Length: 75
Image (tube, rainbow, N blue to C red; front, side):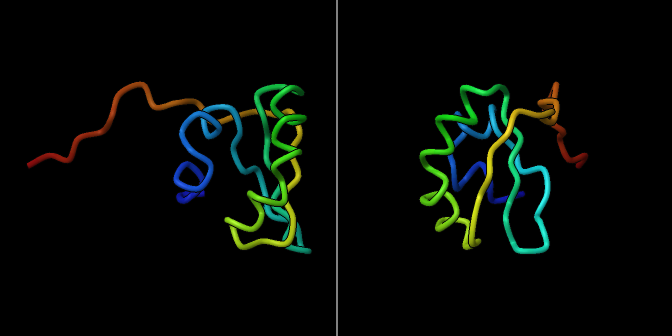
């Protein structure tokens, strides 16, 4: 999950986020809506290859809330 934004880019990462990994290694990704699922479905093989997994599946579902403010390390 940490590599997701680096692999797919910030634009996609804001609208799609990995939800779980199935026993067969398939990464299930929640998307903001069915349009994102459809579009990313066309790039599933490319994204799976970059992730190093056998398959990626996309479906509409809940996404994590964006951080309101960046957390700074106290000095």
